[in-house]
Image 1 (cartoon, rainbow, N blue to C red):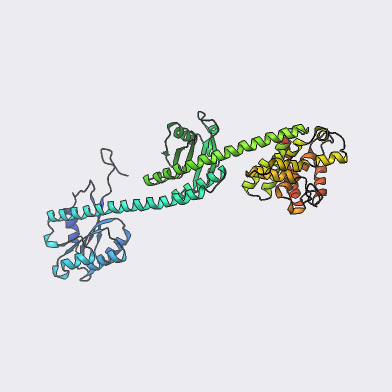
Image 2 (tube, rainbow, N blue to C red; image 1 turned 90 degrees about the horizontal axis):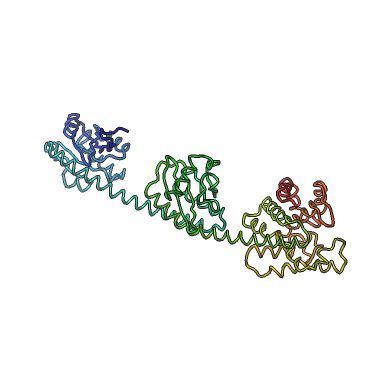
Length: 502
């Protein structure tokens, strides 16, 4: 780009098309208007010497402000045909036309102006220097004002369409019920609004309002080639800057958006490959994100409630297991094994999460089992076994009636986890898929964990012996599908055992 001597950039000139079959007319017009300026902008001349050539130029050049158009060229009405074609066929209503003729009788003034939307009509003999200046000034000023109105109309239309996209996008993400889905949905919709392909949404970790660098941020979602972006010092500095100054800012081709929420924290949106964020796009982004912030807070609150509920369930499970002399990490292993089995079986994310949080409550009914029965190291008598077998019904009575998804699932698991696939289990004698899938998964995880770890009545079994036993009871005690899933993912199961040892 060239610059004026004072450092200010030159303004683009007004494009003027000269259409005339007489080269002298081109030279005289150009010479006369050499020093013309409007709003600090000079003129840039384009030349055509016939109606056909004029059409080619007009079709190619989309921002011609003014055409000086001769009437009689290769035909008596060549200029009029160019005007008609431009207005009607090309639908160009913006470019101003000044019709010039050396034969006034060929084109009656009123008919030309009305029928072909001619801005002005002049005989060549009357266009002296002064009139050429005033005619050009009037035509260009009209073009300038028309384009300002068109730009305002286009901006209004763009903003309206953008708001419609915002509303549609907001409706989509509000349907998401967990933080992961919400963040991914949010990012997809923001990218759709701005039509970008690389982006990332991050938030502050826990109580990290003061911390800086990679440890301060948690990636909620990302799209495109953003893997490892948080280890780049430049991006981390940009995130820290946005958070410290509480502003959104464009850094080269990277836009970092700062969006605070009611919890006192903030979310940071990273958009890559951005040349510039227009005022309209910025406004749309603010409208979208300000509305989303409310939903975001609600999602976070819901997740906090869910996490609190899950932790209480886990701790209650710990109490039950510790009372029966089970290892303290039994319920944690159970929870993770159940999650893995559900995930690998193709269960959706929401159900998988519910099962993971509910599994620790499977033996909650044992809280009512007498110590003499629960802690007996030897074989139970028939009478004692009757008492022990009551704990599924007790567990159901404790948990039944809640409308909370986790507690509803926990009630089913507590009631059915001792049912057997062949129908020989208790307390209802359910068979096959009449047993809820949550309970079938928990049964597999429970047997696996019991065999893999030492109990008061047995030592831990080696892995190959555990696998052999699982195959043996598949289709009898346990659902063969979930047994196969466990065996196929044995390394993951063993990793869970190593992570949560006795």
